[in-house]
Length: 300
Image 1 (cartoon, one colour):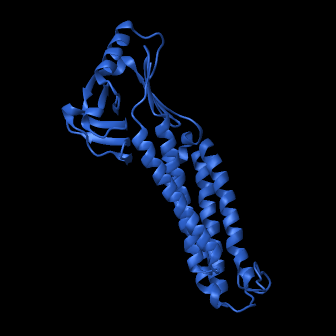
Image 2 (tube, one colour; image 1 turned 30 degrees about the vertical axis):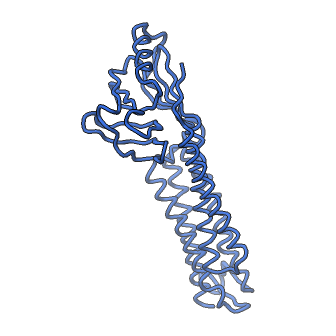
């Protein structure tokens, strides 16, 4: 038996947020294309990238809401949300508590009107993982288990409780363990690795600084100039002949960043340390190019 919570309001809000972020991204891209290259254009592209990423998040969260459901059988309760499945053995469910009995706290995670997925703490219950679409306490049903607690939204809590009891009395047909399943990109360990995310953040920040350095000085650069890095005659790494040629440095660095991060993501899913090595290499390469750019524009 599958139960689906009310989702219309949450889907409407999620769709509006997705379109809003996407519209900002398009406007910023149009502004960057129309403007001459400079700091304004770099900031516009950076903002467009961030807005595009935000639109992707809102879009995925809205899609995940559309898939939110609770499947109940004799073996367990399975909460479906996007690429995630929370599997709860039916025998582990100890009691069901209506939201009107203990209240509903603020949810940390994905939370907007008609949509709440994340964690919260309730004094009389403890830590709770929310997969609900509630707008009022009577729309929340707490599922208390021997391992952790969940909050769901079902239109008929009393009927849901009866179905749980009936299936518990019948007994399981197979053994089910308490676990979470993630599929596709949601299974990538990188998203749950704060160290890996920090290393990628450093690489991205270095790339932004490099582009910003070029953008600030670009309008004032002479039409043609030369520079060397490292700065000794027999080993020139870069020799820029025209003003526009200096843009090749950040372009090459950005291409290398994409390649390094892509390889790093793949390696991270196989061996975390190997992924760290690629992320550190990506950050080091970006910092080296940023230094090259700084030396080049300083001598121009």
